[in-house]
Length: 94
Image (cartoon, one colour):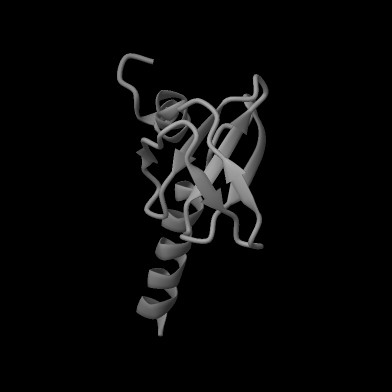
């Protein structure tokens, strides 16, 4: 029983850290139908995170479908900003 409890606690910690994103630059995040997330930055540009928590490239102008069925168009491609947000605590040298 204790082993199961520790497993659940460990999995919860891993899941929580996967969603720990610095949102100081992000104006809005939108969940997409395929499980990915689009971040809209304060300057209007966008970046995308796939359902596995990786920053991914998306062509500007690509039409995406949100979880609620709305369509949005990719503006810019700030993959580097998403990658930086997702890995801000993983950089060496502080």
